[in-house]
Image (cartoon, rainbow, N blue to C red):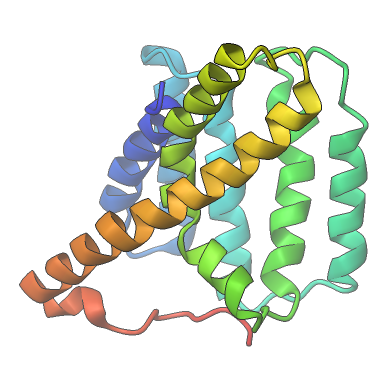
Length: 202
């Protein structure tokens, strides 16, 4: 279960790694699009793969210095569109439009808004991948505890405790596993310790 979108990410990064060797930016995007289309046709990958292409296009625009006006409004529109889908069943074919486009607007807004300097939020961002991996275990554990206590019918409380538990579990995994492993990898290859080539707006 924890594989879910990570399986898509692995396939995307493999295609992306090959595209790096193509000199033309337009050719890179074309190869990415062709590779993603190939995944959807020849492998059991769903239309969610198209959303990786959205991110690639957004990255290309950002690196070219393209600016957007009123990013907060753009993000707000994306959030409203996303909230409007609550309660509706979205088909696999429609999800890149129904969910992908609002998500694209939210990520676009986050990219161009001033970056937070609040320490706790920065740490949560750093630990977000560990939180994503840990939630499979923490949500399951929370549900089992609630079932044992006869509280599983209280969905709101279950959700709140699961979110807090997943955050704590992810932070523990980040400090005990992800950071030490990252330091170890950087020790093997100092190239990984370099500053990002294109840092986000401060």
